[in-house]
Length: 346
Image (cartoon, rainbow, N blue to C red; front, top):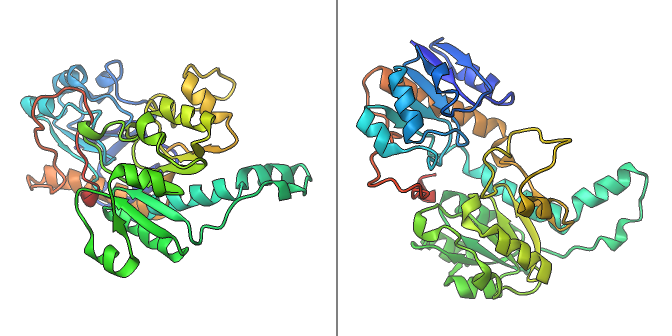
């Protein structure tokens, strides 16, 4: 049984090959799945796609015509897939609900440290033999208040790390973690209070339509001047235009993100020598107090190993007519909104 992997990245292919312990016939291609490339799946019962691929209704119909019966998604988020349409067509889908909570939490901390210590600017000056960077002043993390939006598995790891720096911890979540409250002094508050009292705000929430654009101009307006905002969750958690305004008026002093709301077609592609069409992204990239990484948080050996292993686990379950705990179910009417991803399961 042949398997076609769309959107294969150079850095992930060795891990996928190593996870293919049953020596399935696998074809890797760089092209992303779209209406134009769906015909490449002809003759394949199984395909694997990434979060950037288009598995909307029309594309799924083409895949069905080409004989595809199972889609293994190498990602947590499945907003790019019309799960209802797939169910109607009899195409089964499974995702990777967790790959490494540590990779994401540690990347958030890396963004905080890089922005605070001006690591990028200092490194660039050092490369040109300029060693007078004392004017690039940061602050001690010890004693600062850190607001955590979403305290699931990833947010919990992040909270414990920041507690180690000596930070006061505030949190916003629909459920409370008693261990964090009792052992780490974490205090649950509402969003306005979190935004108003935090020196650093880090987003680790899941996504559902009701909380798309969770942070907007109203909440940004409540922030202390110079607040650091970190988003290693999903691009749609923040209204990026409002973030730019917050950076320009000083409410946001630093912005670090491993996601962008319009990242599809931008992240994972080489745009050097080309003019970006996204004016908001262009503004962000030239700001010295902004650090954008293109979904770099997943790029750890452990995360890539887990993604590959779970992908082939899902494939094996389907081939052997066994239920996969990661199978995606019908979500109700598909509206194109981002479905809920519970970070406590991710």
